[in-house]
Amino acid sequence: MATRELGWLLRAWEHAADVVPAARGAVLVDEAGLVEDLDAAIDLPVDQLATLVARLHTEQFGPTAEGVLDCDSCGEVLEVEVPLDLVAAGSVGSAAVAEAGSRIVVLDSGRPVRVRVPTTRDLLAVRGRDDVAAALLARCVSTVDGTGALYAPRLDAADLALVDAAVEELAGAASVVVRARCPQCGTSLSAPVDVAAFLWNQVEREAPAGLAEVADLASSFGWAEADILRLTPTRRSAYLALVRGADA
Picture 1 (tube, rainbow, N blue to C red):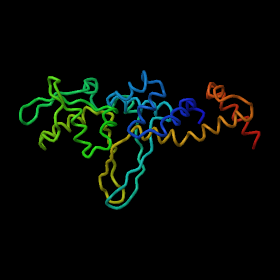
Picture 2 (picture 1 turned 120 degrees about the vertical axis):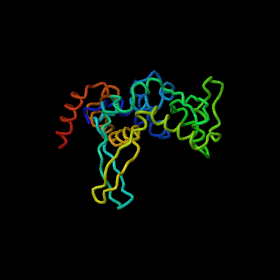
Picture 3 (picture 1 turned 90 degrees about the horizontal axis):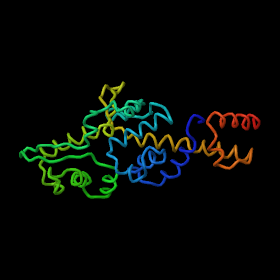
Picture 4 (picture 1 turned 180 degrees about the vertical axis):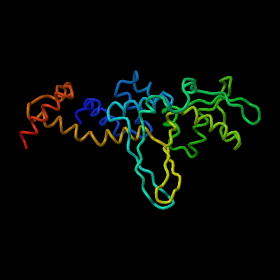
């Protein structure tokens, strides 16, 4: 626990606990000071946000995350290790695509459209819609001249497939998939990686221990929380060893 940045951990736990899952990644990177403010985080394309979230996980909790895959064929539950350091380093997707943020896609009809990467603001805007996918496309697919968004239901299946393929590639770090083979039945398994969910799970798991550290030091030395949070991890760990060793 002492290797974590305790101030960030407790701020992140407090401020992200009550927000909807779609916004947690933006809140976590904002609390870490990786963006100018929360609005800037919400307006980041989801691929760039996922890269920042993976970097934060790598710095605070290590380069890998533990997850599970359920095999629908035989019921086996597989434990998998997700290398978030590769996501943090931008080792997924195309760097050129990530920088572009949008792409011109020529539909089957020959009509060009501009496809851009969705942002957290887009995801929040379409929550609760009857057809979330169509609502998201309406925000992220527009005419090339910028005069307006497209009405998604007007796109046929072939056009939607072209747009979906472009969005998936543009999404880069936000569209990482973990794959494995079931050792029991041999079925190939895959699942999308929610980087922000991995980070939040770690924050939620470790926050109680962080609060306990503050409580132990405050009760033993009479220090204020702000003073405790200013201690380096090494000094905080040393003081905790003294306090908890004496209690033992």
